[in-house]
Image (cartoon, rainbow, N blue to C red; front, side):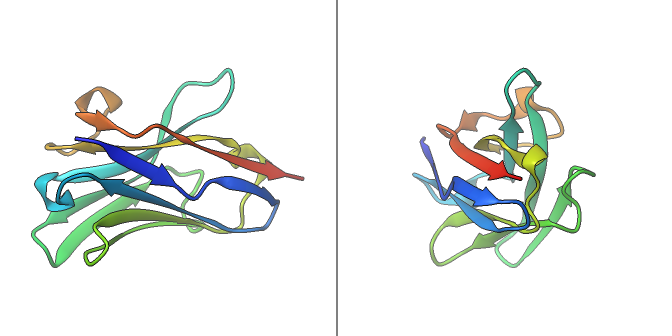
Length: 124
């Protein structure tokens, strides 16, 4: 199984980016897909996760630092899980990773598969 992450880049503070994660298999195979990030010198942190309940329902939750600014969603037709990032701040600068698990994904060690990471840089 591979997870292909895309959509990173460089923006100024206040700008927006949209990340996309495409698994090589049907994403409904996984119970949860999440986005993590790791900034230089910092631990990897969970940014957002999407927990699927069948093909029509899901729940999402977010790190406090991104609530109200980031939105995780899924595109059933494209088989992607996306992270819309608005009102970006310099402290959002990090490498962002998508991850997938058959469980609920409360902790990073629960994730079975990881994408390659995509760089997000926000300048002030």
